[in-house]
Amino acid sequence: MKWLDTPPIWLVGFILIAWAQARWAAFRFSFGGAWADLLGGLCVGAGLLLMVLALMELRRHRTTPIPHRTASALVTSGIFSRSRNPIYLGDALILTGLILRFDAVLSLPLIPIFVWLLERRFVLPEEDTLRRTFRADFARYERKTRRWL
Image (cartoon, rainbow, N blue to C red):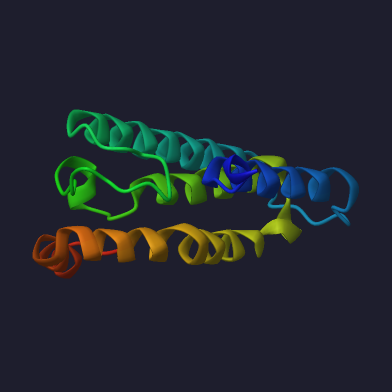
């Protein structure tokens, strides 16, 4: 059951909630047109790009992208020089984009809830592990690079 507690599973769950809200409980609220589709597509594309760049960088350093596993290297280069959590940021962008695409106005509060959940379930425990494993290097990285943007 541990595999169920992963960010992609949470993301799919939140996406399904947004889709269901748009389908069965829209209540005539709408973002209003093509601009939402365009912005939604850009958000999904940006989220996927962030994830691919992060996974490539993790692979280059031969460390794991899987949450709750101890990293074999502290990756601070590439996209990780801009954000300490580019994959989770990508997840949030994908959720935002799909909410826009689905025209799920009432699902907008899901975005901060999802980010909060990611931070509590994954980001904070991972950062604690990195802090214990890479001590001074992580302290420097933490001072230099923001958690999200």
